Length: 156
Image (cartoon, rainbow, N blue to C red; front, top):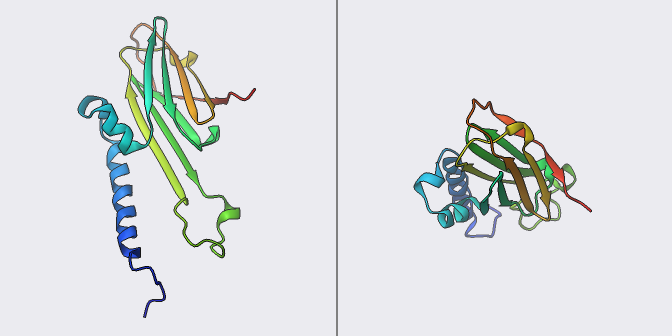
């Protein structure tokens, strides 16, 4: 006989599994082309803005609660890929005090297609108070290999 007194535990586990499957599906989905931004933001949890500032694009994304070392920003061809991922630290692994634990692993992903080519080597990213800002200087179209953009702290 089970000692778990929560009659909804199996339903919660099914919802967690469905959420993970949906997140995996979104990784391959071109949301800018096939979905409204409101639907994609709700599904991914990451809202984004893309501004055209004449000489550069500025992409702003909400990544609340993530540290800069938990955020990966990559530019591949004309698309910016943002992944924010964290695991619960080893000091929090003890289940002795938890009545409920849903923060073991969290991932947010978003891809944004840019209207034109950018200078990948001159791109910059900063994160401050859960807001990621990526500055992408415009360039003439050229063959761009995927390049990682380091996220700097914007602490003052």
